[in-house]
Structures are given as structure tokens and as C-alpha cells.
Length: 298
Ligand code: HSE
Image (tube, rainbow, N blue to C red; front, side):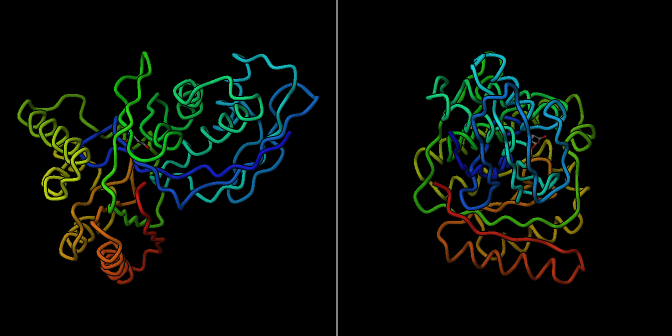
């Protein structure tokens, strides 16, 4: 009647895949306890870590839970406890982890009536509360793991993309907050054709490189000519950090989701650790507090 779950952080966009590509960070995430109750409805009974609303209608985990509850019409209610480790506004899918956690846990307790795509569909409602738009590029990797591609939002279609065996991510979170809604608002509504061509050529090659474990092609494909030029201005020392990562063996680097976290990809743990040292050096000098993680992509 009760389940304790780990709901992982995720990196959305992955440079050239704005709003469609993402990958899961297995070692960073929130914990949640979901409990079946006789009392009907969705009740958030505990939140630790960050100050978030207890009213289900105002809470990301609550909104996705309500979406599923209304569809499933179970003859019970649910209590949700949220132990939040992923800081809201950090750019590693904090809202997605909350949105996914509640529906995943409820589904388990109900005997798994829904598949992962259906769960993502409910979670989109919670995600939309946080970012003011429906996107699933953090939700899908949080539910499926590894790399995922959101082929379409309506109808929702998610593709699982394989990861090369030895691929590691180093993620640094400079401790400033950027609201997804704000970093979406600064993006241009139209893009030049030549930029679009460059972007989809990189995106296609990136997907190909993941399928073929071609690290060299992956390195040449991890570029973003559309979003990064605008959003990087919101992240202090972004250029310096990216340069240091590339000089110390990263295959590529970019903004994680809507920032301010920066992700880098490396072949092998040793390189990922070197990149970690290089990024630490850059931000240690700035006086900006930061958190940094290295994690294997599965
Ligand atoms: N794709 C979304 C964006 C992810 O970049 O705005 C936000 O977490």
C-alpha cells in the first residue's frame, strides 16, 4: 500500500535537440513516498528540501497525480511525500522529477494499468504548471531512462535512443536560478533557414552517433546554433566553462535544459573526472557557489 521511489534528474535539449531530446541522470534525483489511503483524493502530506505548495492543484507532483486520478477513478486516495533534492530552477528537470514521481508511484500501487507513454501524458500536465508550456523532453528520460526522443507531443510518441557504453556526463550547477518560462521567453520566434539546416544536420548526426557509438561523430555534432547564443547570456562564465571542459577532454558541452546547469559529455570516467576538475576551477574563481556531479549514462 506504500511505495518509496527515486525520481531522477534529467538533461533536456542536449545541445541541438531543443524540446525533443533528453537523457537521464541516474545518480541525482528526488525521493518520494506514495501511499494508498481510504480517504479519496490526492493529498500532499510532506515536503522536505524546498518550499513548495501543499495544495495538489498548485504542486507539479499534485497536478500530474490529479490528471491520472481523474482518468483512473480508483476507489482509494493517495498521500504523497516529497523529499526534494533537485533544486527548482536548476535546469536538470526538477519539475519533471516531481511530475513523473507521483504518477509512477501511483501506477505501481494500482497494478500498472498505464504504460510509460501514458504516464508521460499525465506528467505533462504537471510539467506545464512549472514551465507554462507542454514539453516532455525531461519527463520522457526520467520515466524511460537513457536517451529519449520526443517524436511528437500530440499524439505523444517517445523513442528510446541507445547510449554508447562508455558515455559519462559531468554536470555543473552554478547556484543561480533561471525560470524555464523566462528563458523560453527570450528565444526568437523565427530562425534563419541556414541555422535550421545546421541544427538538423547536427541533430541527425547526433542521433546516428548514439546508435553507432561513434564518439568522434558525437563530438562533431554537439552544437547548438539556435538556442545557446541567447540563453548563454543568462549564465555567468558560461563561455569560459565550456572552453575549459572542451580543453580537458569533453566531447561537447551545452546548457542543460533551460539552464543555468551546464552539461558535458565525455568518453570514459577518467575524462569525465578531468572535466569535473576543470569546471570546478573555473567556478571556484568566480565566487558563485556550485554543485557538480559525474554520472554514467545508461
Ligand atoms: N526543452 C525545455 C527548454 C526544457 O529548454 O525550455 C526545460 O527544462
